[in-house]
Image (cartoon, rainbow, N blue to C red; front, side):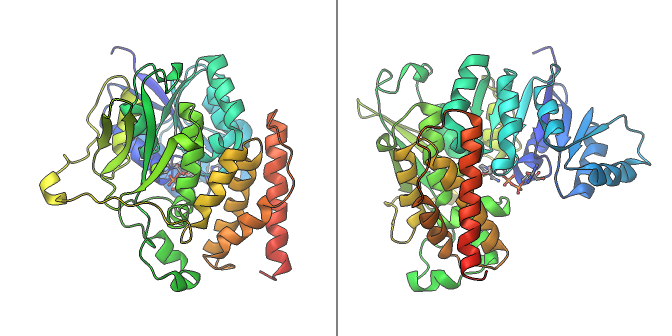
Length: 396
Ligand code: NAD
Ligand code: MG
């Protein structure tokens, strides 16, 4: 490869952003950082700017821009600072950018990720919430612009690696019977059911296998993460919810599997380190060193599997129902979950009330068709308001 790829990292200060920059720094002859974006961790963003010398840095507002510039004052950098959603969309769609890592957490990532898609970039999708919210529109935009969409979520990256190359022609055409989506079961897989109401945010964020941001860690503990991933997989691979089976696999060594009609089952294995899917997607269709240690099967010794328990994890049932209903339901599910998870992290609600809030919000009527972005965003707003009312009614 001769030309250096210009990469924008949306959500550079987060867990995925930092892992991406770790991989990029290993391959300076392949990748150059075009833009970095951050939200609240401005000191970390300043450190990253000094290390990677991006053309642009994006922060939420003018006050954050002043603070970042103050922190960069001594460094001899030509980094320009942009602000807000317009700044995020600009660095996602800039004609000089080849690749965009979409690693902002939650609905806040939707517009910049779509901007990258519409500009026909190679889009590395970590921000699953964006696809869950706007699936049909998002995939339409991918087809229209010829963007290359590659999954970063470890399960979806695994499925992508195990599917036939021409899977876009249809799973049945390629002889695929089912997709087996693995899940670790999170920190509460074996916690007594009666104790779940009293678990703390610290316990929820202590994932047994993965080190991640706080929102996705809580989602993993409630298994809403797997519910969002079910919806994500339906859009990415043009699958029906019934074609996807969730398998609890506590070791997180098999990242997912594809079951073919001839009885072959292909799996992708690896250490639970996001630098593997990030490197895979960055270099695709080539392979590069990620810095991840080789898998030691003898040290792992055994791999276990069991079916998920929907009594323990009601969020799974809620997500499957939203996946089957389609339209604006996934956007509402996602928005209600974002409000509920934030309230849990602020200790305003119990862990078990996350599912109660989502259930309550999803009992609302909703516009059926997610016909354009405004409808999707209106459903998101309605769900946030209704989740807010749930909290208010209970004085939280
Ligand atoms: P994180 O909390 O560590 O980082 C989130 C990033 O988003 C930060 O850079 C933050 O500055 C930015 N951000 C937050 N709110 C923002 C806003 N309103 N506007 C602009 N930027 C904002 O999260 P993470 O663990 O890196 O996860 C990022 C995304 O990747 C999520 O969608 C998550 O589901 C997905 N993902 C993460 C992992 C993982 O291992 N961490 C695995 C699979 C998928
Ligand atoms: Mg995942």
